[in-house]
Image (tube, rainbow, N blue to C red; front, side, top):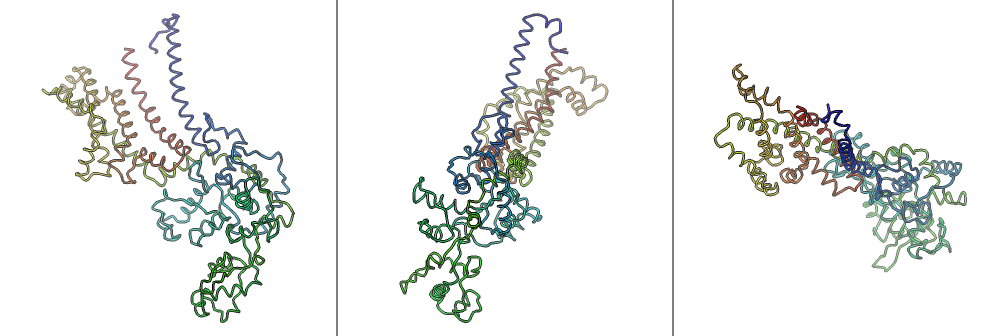
Amino acid sequence: MGLIAKTGRRSPKTRFLLAMILLLLSVGAVTMTVPFLLMLSGSTRSGVDLHEFSLWPQFLQDDELLFQKYIEGLYNESPANLRAAWEIDVSDFSRVKRLPEVDQEKVVRWREFIAYLDIAEHERFAGFTYCPISRGRPYSSRLFMKHLIERYPAGIQSVNEDLETGFPNWNAFSVLPPDSRTRHGLVADTPWWRAWHSFVADSAPEWTIGIHHLDGYYHERVTTVLGGKDAPRQALTSTSGPDSPHWELFVREVVHPGFVRMDARYADPWRELLQARYGDMDAFRDLTGSTVNAWEDVDLPTTLAGAGPLDADWLAFLLGWQELEQDRLHRIPLEGLSLDSPDLRWRELTGESPPIRELDEWMFDRHRSEIRRMFLFQNYGTVWEILIVHGRGLWVTVVYCVSAVALALIVNPLAAYALSRFRPRHSYAFLLYLLLTMAFPPMVTQIPLFLMLRDLHLLNTFWALLLPGMAHGYSIFLLKGFFDSLPRELYESASLDGAGELLMFRVITLSLSKPILAVIALGAFVNAYTAFMFALLICQDERMWTLMVWLYQLQQHYGPGVMNAAFVLAALPTLFVFLLAQRQILRGIVVPSEK
């Protein structure tokens, strides 16, 4: 039954009033819905659409935007990587356009060529491993973490022991592969990197893996740096030539040594280098574990991988090693050096650049649904892993909120019932004292509470969270006023029937006070759920952090996409609790008005 009867709604003034009420309610609903939709949309964004203002993720129906997001993730949010791979001049991923048509036959031939070569570790790269703009947890890193979790069910400590890492927990897990095109990409052969390269080669989705384009990297890293942005593009060749003025600089100092090949005919200068560095054959055998008997038996490895324990000497032979005593530079001549990479082999075979851009388009078309789903749920998966799977934030918050609500519904009603039922002489003084607690802001009482809890040795415990807010002055005042309005005759009748105070409190008082108790429960939940500064102050141990503290910590390390996903997930419990309590709250408002 409505508050206004049907006959009363026939009046124009009443209809106008109802229309205005509906309008205001609609405006209120919009003001509450729009921010939530913005958070939903923002939780799916990456660098390309990070600053886009929309209530709905546009990439769900815009394939061009989805393609831009995919290319951005594949090249790890680096336009320089994209320029080197596609050989185009682009400064932003939002300017990337799709090709009108993809040469499917050429892509198939390139894939067959790559499969035949058996690509080495330094010749491929893993996309979705670094996101400096969107600042999320990269997709490939999450897949690698799941791979290690399945491989090491005993936990992160077994990973640290086997792979020689030092992660304190799974939430600290990260992987940042070096750029394997560059000299800085030469890293030690450790169990950790062996596990990573094995994952990339065997388990990573094919649409997250790319092949380095050495020719494009040469132009991006050397030609434009030394000759300017408008310097003409010169095709990189496997050996030095007059058209490649910076070829020697690129080979000796810039490119990853795995792409370099040495001519075995220059073994004599190689042996001279080894004699200068080791002195005699006995020292050489002791330090390298070699079994040769004479320097003439030492061959020049053509590749860095074939150098074995002589890899440092091989690199010194490439870059040049100065013998101070003889004032002599030991270095392989330029004629003994060459480059080898998949794109250079393809160019020598076909006379054209490899179809890397066409391959990216082909991969996108083939895995479009999977890519869209990844961007839709990527940030939610990150938050779920941090807060729930590998963290205690959700469980601590659930225990804290449930306990806080239970204590609020036990302590406060008991105190209010005693003041209302027995009416002590100084009940108003008690109420005044309780109301005075509202005069002090929480920040004023936090330090004394911290010192008291520290002296009681309760820090980093649930008792530290629960005890300070167990009794709430305003709730007791509100409940006492409600209990005073209950008919006294009910208690007198129950007392004549032999009911005790506890039975009357439970059957009569609490049964008739469900609306006000719902308000108290909702307030206790909101106070516990949104507690941040107090929870952080008295529970500084990460194992006792609540969701609000975790959200603050996430904000220090992650970008807007992850934070919006965290806010959406954090808003759901409050909405759920309100829906549970709204019926009782509305009964307390509507039913008395109808009566």
